[in-house]
Image 1 (cartoon, one colour):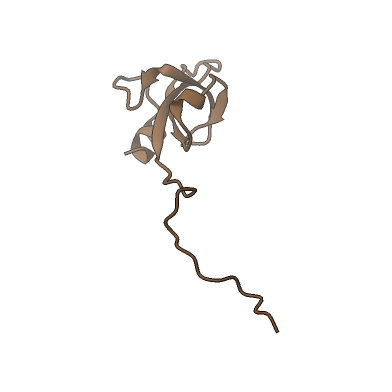
Image 2 (cartoon, one colour):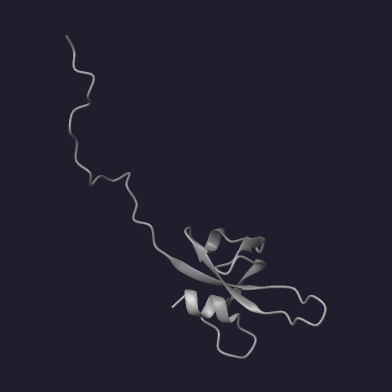
Length: 87
C-alpha cells in the first residue's frame, strides 16, 4: 500500500521568496472641509509594480499611490493614524 503523505522536502528552495514590507505614500482626496492627507500603504510587491491606482491605506482609507513621494513624509498633511501604525 502506498503512503498518501508526500515525502519531506527542504523548505529552503529557489521558488520560495521572502516578502518584504514596504510602505508607499498615497494621497487622499479632500472631502468638504477635510483636507487631502498623505497616507501609508503596505506594499507586498515591488514598488515598480505600483501603477498609481487607488489602494487601501493602513488606516482603511482609499488613496492613490504615488511613486514620486516616499513614506514617511514629514509635515502637517500626514494622516495621524497611518503615521502611528507605520512606525
